[in-house]
Length: 338
Figure 1 (cartoon, rainbow, N blue to C red):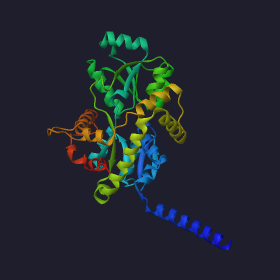
Figure 2: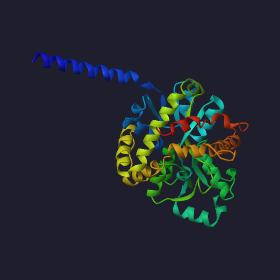
Figure 3: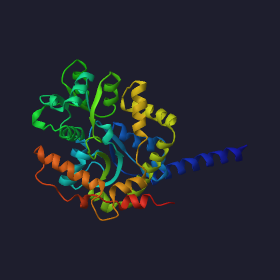
Figure 4: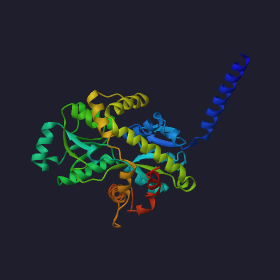
């Protein structure tokens, strides 16, 4: 009996030592992400143990938008982050952020929405859009999309009244009858459409390039390229898992919503999960970041378009050379088999 007790004690001690060793073996990658649906991939990767599988402690921190993430970059508070394209453009030019991947091509998910009668009239006679009062989250991807949609209808931005507003406030004001149109992205698009509103235009119809991206700091790229590759592999595994089964992805997304304090109707949840499942695989991400003929890649072209948007709105003075801040080498290594 004494030998058995000694053996059990030794086994318990050995297990504890191995646990400590495994914990110590994980290398921290300070990750800043967001509570909207593209940020779900990092949440899923952690919940599924995929970061641990690749030797990463992601040290995840979630934010409601990209602005505080860009601000935190100046203080060197993170190593890898998820951003929408506009804050990535600002961060790459002012702070030297390097784009290492693209999570979603989401032009179709950005919409300009109105009440049915108003949209019907505008589609029949686009000139009726002049004087429209439009709720817009300014200097955002949605603002960029709104400009493109107005151009599609031959309407200049100074022909309408842009009402600066965050997404939640816009939804509340529009619900009580204010404004003519509202610029929105998921899940607010689903909430608006559930109430009988109608899409006037989306980013894809307007010909806009809109994507969400993964970025790293110049310092981290130089010091720990190996960890960037492992981090991408963990997220790539999560993307593959998410794309395979809608039911289990929905169950995981419910956990994400509970974690971030979000609520949604079943219809909105279903629509959001449909967007979630369009996440780009590592191999497809490479296609967005490279070309075979030496022309500009999708992502460089998108960044230049957004830079011109910022110039029109007084935020930038010239279009930078974005080729130096887009680095596909990490993705190529991460996508290699084995």
